[in-house]
Image 1: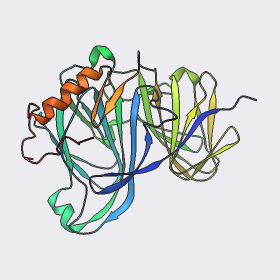
Image 2: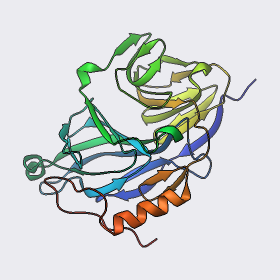
Image 3: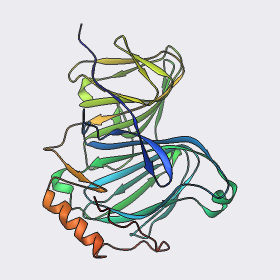
Length: 290
C-alpha cells in the first residue's frame, strides 16, 4: 500500500504584528508546495478593545501575498494607493513583482471595540519570467468565488482550478488554492493532475490513507497518486499546491527571489528609502539586523 502522505509538518509559533501565528511553510522538511513558499495561520483569537492587528508598511519582492479571513477584518494599504477592507471569505491578491510596500492594520472603529480575528496569509513565489513584473493589487469579494457542494463537502475555489471548477482570481502561476468545509464522514478527492498537493487542517481532524492529520498540521501528499481526504469529524481544511517552479527560491525577511544578488539589492533599497511609500501610512518597519 502506498503511503499517501510524503511529509507531515506541524505548525510552529511565530510573532507577527503583535500576534502569535502558526507557521508551516517554509519548513526544513519542505520549503515549498507548488509555488507556495509561505503559510501563516493567525488565530482564532479575540482582541481586546484598543488592541488589534498592526503591521506597519513593509516591502516585498518576487511574490504574491494572499490574505484570506474566516473571521474579523483587516485594512490593507499599499504603495499603489490601494485601500481595501478585507472581510471574511474575500481574497486579497497582491503581486509584489519588482517591489511593493503595504501595511495591514485594524480599522479605528474596530480597534476601539475589539473582536475576533482568524485567517491565513500565504506567499506565492513568482515564476522567474514574472519576478520583476510591475506590482499589482486585486481584491475579490466572497460572492465572486465559486462554491461546490457535494457529498458532505462545501468547497470554495479560491484560486486556480479544482475538480473542473475555476476561480476568477488572476494568477501568474499554475496553482490551486481552496477552502473546504467537511461534515464528519465527508470526502474530498485531490487528483495527482493538480501537481504538488498539500492539505492544512484549520479545525477538526482528517484521515489520509489511514494516517491522522490534526488541527494545525499540514500534510504534503505523495506525488503522482490519487488521494481522498476523509473528515474524521466536522472539519475546516485548506488545500493548496500546483506545478513546481523552474528552480529554488531564496528568502530573506520579506524578500523572495531566484537570485541572492537581487535580495541584497532589495535590502539596500529598503534601508536607503528607495522603495515607494504607502499613502496614508507614514510608518515603516526597519530592515532587520539579521
